[in-house]
Length: 494
Image (cartoon, rainbow, N blue to C red; front, side, top):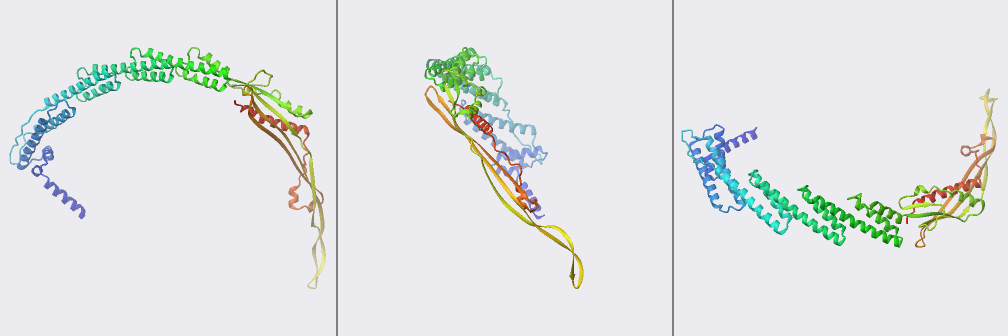
């Protein structure tokens, strides 16, 4: 509560101290003027000293403004012209405030005296002057742009005139000047693009031709209908494509001479640069086919069988008529047919097969246990009394547990080699080893099953598998070897 009373008392004391005459005495003329006008607009009548203070503040503010205006003699500087406009507008607002509130009288009927002036024409004149100076500066910039072929300066001249819009959207000659500035900008850009294209054609520089094309596109921002722009773009596009085409042709000539498949592939990919600009470029399709013809590798898949007899023939059967055509792509053509002069040979070497021996071992042990076989009624004397009680009759039983293990290990060893017939070198040699392991277990018992321990019961398995046949092992090894081989063929790269 005390805080509220203190705040209220402070507000009252501040209000009582804030009077127009006291503010004027402190030199706060603008604040005094605004405070007095606010009080009058609120319907509050000023005291005599406040009216006289308002007269003084009004007079001093006007004098200061007129003195500052008189001090600004330079009328070609936009900042100074703008400052005069701001001063006149401030004076105009002040005079209009007084004019609309007159007569201004004190409580004892003292009537303030104010000299009211209309500054509207001064403001208009200075705004027109501002626009004239902007237009003159823009004209000078555009003349320099034309003389020096400076496209950026032409754009600056165009953008500079936007300052006129602040005061006069209908300024005489503004639209035509802007059109002229854009025309000069486009002319300079077009001339630069033409020079770039001429140099690109002379030096066979596709990047420079591309730059010329991109440079000309700057014109589109301002004038999509610029005369000659469409024809120039077509010429630049053709020039760029001609250079790329010539580069690809040279690459293919070298690739054909040196049997460089990678160079032919690069030439093929290089043609995609033309696709971006002209997919229907004359001869593009033929040159692309030529690149594929030179760059494609004919891959002969050969089975080199070092295995003997029936087993060797059986394994080789898995490699006859492989479906390797599904691995063909743009750059590799696989075949198992005898061909002359293949580019690559994929040699499937079948070196050794070991079907392994059958190995069986067994062991046995005996489980014994005493079990209750029956319960008999017997008489006994307990505490001098004859009673009948149950008596368990036990019998020892046994069982023989027989365990059998069967194993057979087999393996097929070989390799896949990729041979370059042009360089007479092996590109890759990948050893391939496949194996098949047979493991079987059986467990049975002889005797009384009741004697078996829990562990022995868990071991019982009467389905002891027979050893796999040689044919089964050959099939399994050959199939696994073939699958790994096909994966290596799929990964074949020169």
